[in-house]
Structures are given as C-alpha cells and as structure tokens.
Amino acid sequence: MNDILDQDHQGYTKELTREFFRNVYGYMFLALAISGGVAFYVGSSEEIFASIFMKPNGGISGLFYVVIFAPMLLSMLIQGGYRRFSISTLTGLFVVYSGLMGLMLSVIFLAFSMESIAITFFVSAGAFAGMAVLGYTTKTDLTNFGSLLYMVFIGMFLAMIVNLFMHSEMLDYVVSFIGVFVFTGLTAFWMQKLKNASEDTMLDGVERKKMALVGGMTLYILFVNLFLTLLRFTGGSRD
Image (cartoon, rainbow, N blue to C red; front, side, top):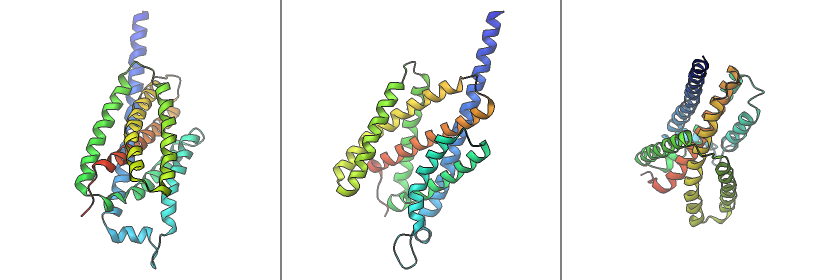
C-alpha cells in the first residue's frame, strides 16, 4: 500500500515538474520572440531606428534613456514584487519588458551582420542548453557556486561602469571573457533552483504560475546576456 502511495506521489510530482517547466520555457520563448521581432523590425531599418531614438534636429531622444533604464527597473519590479501582483498584471509587465528589451537590442542589427548574429545565437543556444541540462541533472548543491558567481557579476558590472570612462578595449574583452563563464554558470544554478521549486507540492497553482514567469524571465535574461557577451567575440561588423 505504501509503495502504491509513493508511486502516486512521485507521478504527481513529476507531472507538476513537467507543467512547471513547460510554463517556464513558454515564458522564456515568448520573451525571445517579442524581443527578437521588435529588435529586427527596428534595427533592420536605419530610418525606423532614427525616428525612435533620434530627435528631428539631431541628438538623442528622451525615449533612448527610457529604453536603456526601464527594462532593468521593470525586471526588479517583477522579480521583487511578483507575489503582490496578479498573474495577468505580471504577464502584462512581462510583455512590456520584453518589448523594451527588443528596442534596446535593436542596435545589434545596425552594428553586426545578420550572419554573425545568427551564428552567435545558435552558439549561445547550445551553450545555454548544455548548462541547463547540467544544472537540472547534477546532484551537487550549486547554492554556494551561484553566490560566488553573483559576486563576480557585481565586479563585472562595476568594471563595465569604470570602462565607460576609460574606454579600454582590453578591459572590455576581459569582462566579456569572464561574462561567458558567469552567465553559463548562473544558468546551471538557476535550473537547479527552478527544479527544486517545481518539486514543491506545497505551492498552489497561482504561486507556481508566478514563479514560472519569474523563472522564465530569469533564464531569458541569462540567455540574452550570454548572447551579447559572445557577440563581442564572434560578431562581424555590418557592411
């Protein structure tokens, strides 16, 4: 009797995990689709790009600064306050966030060739998938590893701010090189964290959907950062 109950419980947990990750990847791919579509539409035309980010008489428009800072603020709002919002509100904020990220990423279509963007995208997808599988399947607790990577990330962020004034190409490459390891490592860390959350049978349906949305957004952020980091190495300039 106990064996039957254990099997039923394991089956129930596996089904919850499958549903949770379907939602996680659904949100992640939705964000990638929205951002990619917006970025390609805006970045493939210098006229459209200029009409959004440039003033008619020259200079940068105010929308440029909104696009630069708003995604970060929105991600902090979603990740920090997701428990307070309804799932419909969170989804709306998530869609807006993805669109703003697309506007911000549109510049890569002006700076890099389509071939290099496509190649880097698939390389990033392969590296991301490999680390995601590793994070999901490993039995090693990655908590301390993740904490260390976040400390390195803070150092990277500070170095990037300093380099805005130094304009050091060497420092930029060093930060990018470290970034590849940081973002792939954090992918494994977050996959393990999401797996543990997916197996928590105490979470109700709404809470699981909210956590899936936050998880999907987090994986999306990690993938985009990995892609941009690799693009610094592999990207060929646009003719």
